[in-house]
Structure formats: structure tokens, C-alpha cells
Image (cartoon, rainbow over all chains, first blue to last red; front, side):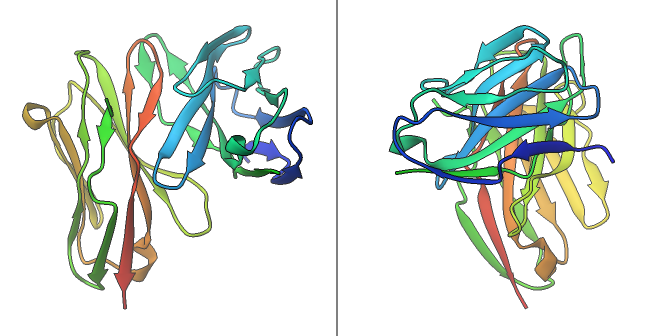
Length: 115
Length: 114
């Protein structure tokens, strides 16, 4: 089954404790991305990756890191989480051809609470 | 400035009514892509439609239809004969080639009352 998986689905942590949210896709997609969803703000792109070893900042990259060492994985790293990073996080992937954007497939979401 | 504006925050309709969700976008690129996604109460994001900037033809899929008008920078979504299962948050999104960054609107929460 074609899917994007995220782990963990729920996480409660404390300020300053490094954490990683994993994302994996089995569709051989070139493009992967992370979003956060907050009430009244919709989805905002944190980082995206066009392919292995190629990553770019989205609209709200501060406080986050990513890496793309393998095509299928795109982990989101919070080196020192703060309460304002409490949010619902989505990973997404899509096929990509030259200059063409295709629909993204989203993971189930990770609800993160930072106390 | 907001690249994608969904001015309707919440809409309530009675079942079987038609409803239109508005989406206005802003871009200077000539090549771009527009999308609609549905987020039901269960929380997952479901892709509904993708349109490129060179294709202004309206599309109909069952009870759903989309009206793309470049002259007004709008990509509106109409649900005909709404059903309770249509209750969800709907997001409009824009991607500007070749940057491939995505911009989502703030969403419209639709409630269909039985």
C-alpha cells in the first residue's frame, strides 16, 4: 500500500529536549516536505526537499532541522523544542518532474506538545 | 502577504444545499499549480484536485466542481447537494514552478447540518 508514515503519532516533551519525528514514504517520490498546522493559520511549510541531499527552507523553518540522506526518509529534528512549537505536524511526499508540481500525499500527522 | 486567501473561515449549510468555497491566490509566476485538499474530522489530508495555470477549463467530478478564473485569481470549489460526509476543513493551495514551495490557505470549515 502506497503511504507516508510518521512516528511518533503523539509526543509530549519538555522544553529543550531534542527530538526527532521520522517520516518515510514507499512511493519513490522525489519531493518531500514538512508542515505544521495551527488553528487559524492553516498549514505552513517548514522545509522541503527536492531530492536526496537537497533541502530548502519553507515559510517557518526557525527552530527546525531536516536531512535527506535517503530518498524514502525525511526526518524532522527539533534540537531545542520550545512551547511555541506545540503543533500538529504533517509530512508529505510527491512525484516531481522538471518544473511541475504534483499532488502531495500526506502522512497521518504527529501531534507534538512541548511543556 | 498571504499568497492564498480563503476568506470564509466557517460555513454551515443544511444538507442538500449547494455551497461554494472561495479561494483567491496571488502569484507573479506564469506557471503555477493550484490544489484543493479535504481534512475530515479524523484529521487526514485528502487530495481532491490539481490544476495548472495553463488549464482554465472547469472540472466536475460527481457532486464536486471547480471554477478556475485567472482574470480574478480565483479557484473556487462548489459542492452540489451537500451531504453530512462533506463536513470537513477544506484547504486551497498554490505551488509556484519551479521553486516547488507550497502555500496553503487558512482553510474553510464546512459543517453540513442534517
